[in-house]
Length: 244
Image (tube, rainbow, N blue to C red):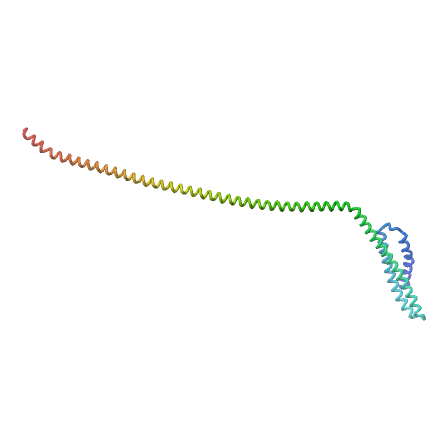
């Protein structure tokens, strides 16, 4: 029963699809999706027909050994299998033709689209190259600006360092001059102090000498006075005696 169903299905498929290659050749390709679906259907049916032919041949070959003319039965079964396999191959070829036609159509479309879009792509390519050149020039300018900034910073740093060194030397010279002036002033003040002290001591000495001289004169005068009084009393007394 199963063999008969497979054989019937294979025969119906063969009968229904026998005219398909002619139809495919005559009918124009209008819908690529439908054509690709038909090609897939042909491949599937060819695979089913081939499997059914192999299964039928296996069953018929076994059945032939129960008959009187075994070889003839097997040859007839083999011929039916070959016919079905040939039909399956034709369906595969038609499916391949459809797929190849679809590939060629897509290739032609891509070529036509490429030709149609060639000017636009050329413009886009030129714009892209221009953008790339502009980007490269911008990067080069940035690198140049960075290098210029770096050199300028280095020069400014060196100038600041030189200025700081000069300022430090000027300040050191000013501090040294100030310290020298202060030292000279301190020496002058010390000299003045020594001179003032010597002058003070000289004046003090002279004052002491004058004071001592005055004291000596006063003592001498007192002494002379005392001596004069002592010498004058006897004389007075002697003068008084005659008067009495």
